[in-house]
Image (cartoon, rainbow, N blue to C red; front, side, top):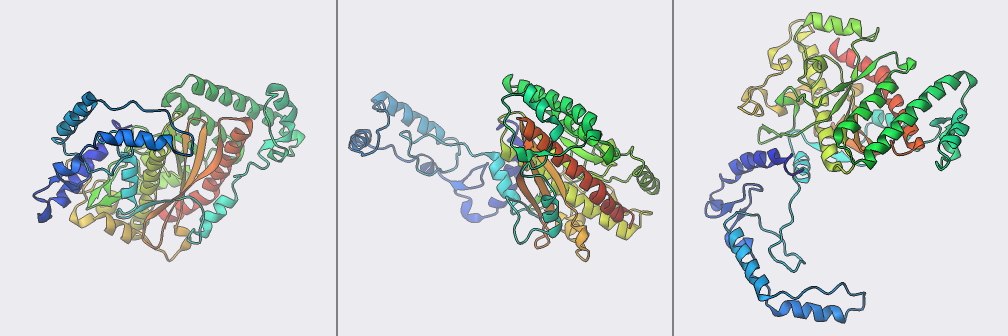
Length: 468
């Protein structure tokens, strides 16, 4: 992970050094390129403890009332010389000052996670990107309604017609009675077909887990599972899955900024899109493209995906991937998606879908060589502030996303915070996963419920934005 996130260090170096070097009092000190903190060589390496310290500590442990830890080897003179040599060598490298450690070696430095550092910076960006664990008094009612409609507790997710089939196939699978719902004879063949899909997904996921497979096989499983879910007749082919691993956010104005510079980061792997092939969507997409052939309806740069409405995403990772990293990538995607909806509101209000204004509809910003700095005429704060119109409560249209780390899937719902114009990511919410029959059926039901929401709520509201 440190190699993959090296761009965070270079970005912090550019932004923080440009701010800290403006302070005269720091000229005489060394500036840490990673943290922008003034420090001197004396602060880097505290003096070594006296040779008697180790003996004193070992004697103290002997008289302790609790169970003693294994006795440590006594430091020798050679050890002390090597520590002193390492300390003097490190003094030439400008490391940040560290808090006193309980370790016996004063030269050990615990690495700082760039993901945690970046996620903390997002909280105070412009606009901020914040995370919350659960619903509170500030959560919009529309978000509460979505959550209440989800089978978060796994009640009634498996058809009762499969009870005997599950017992015969997986005799050690322990499924509580509340997980079953009464199915009808008419649903028998549908239930059996779905059971075949479930068994196949479970076996492939178990194989990936045992063989310690990388991300790619897990990504294939996620795409296939969601494609099967979206193929249900009741969804009328309204949704599809798009691979966006190699597609970037198409405008710097859609990202959080610090000191006028967009924060660089990675984003989600899969986008859940309103399909271009559904009978109810074709006329709308065609009319929008006719009115403006260059219009981009989503935050993604890839051509086929940029022309579609994107209500959701999935960030996939192999077993053991860091959750904070996955949630950060998901949060950035959701932030950009909500910012894009704001842009579309401005575009439809000002241009009336006939003469799009270059400042809003052309997805290029006044940028530096890295494509991240927004010019004076299009600051990110101005773009977001102008875009929001809170006269209509339904304009706080959320987007959703999963972190799918190995077998564990967690749901997140992102919405606009009307108090500071930031974005709040609510989650993780337990969505089941690929580890058991009950977990997979729970995930299936939850994904189906969100697909219905996208079909019945998100798409009509999206149409009202672009057709205003």
